[in-house]
Length: 76
Image (cartoon, rainbow, N blue to C red; front, side, top):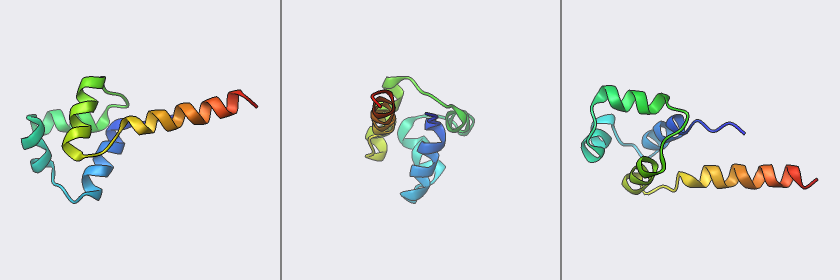
């Protein structure tokens, strides 16, 4: 299981047609900080919750799905 949440967030932002500027304005961060976020493989839960709320996307679902897949592998 490898989840790179920063890449997933960047992809969702693009899928929704939003710009970096749009997102930076809503989350209150600089371009440099946003670029660092996109390169992070993991985030703390508070920050991920804020981003999920802003983009209207449950990013926690990626972890739930990976856990379910791992549980299915372990029970075989």
